[in-house]
Image (cartoon, rainbow, N blue to C red):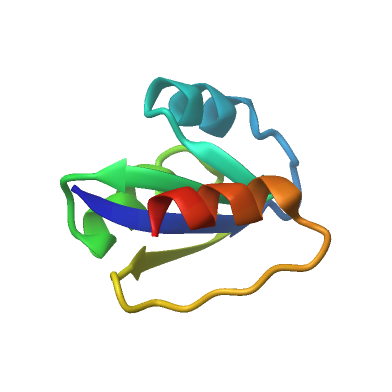
Length: 88
């Protein structure tokens, strides 16, 4: 399993319901409003394609695969910090 961060910006229509439902099914963790962490047995491009199918064509998506040597820092994001501490 690999750990991925998925972040997105919905532009014209802000309908996140498809993503939220899929994130719940995949046991995603909301680190911030539009930044989620997931565990997948996929490549970064495959995760991007999965997320892309849940948003509109004009929306922006960034997918980052986290590696064991990654460092991180947060501010006023207790849930994100707890998840990152437990999973990285």
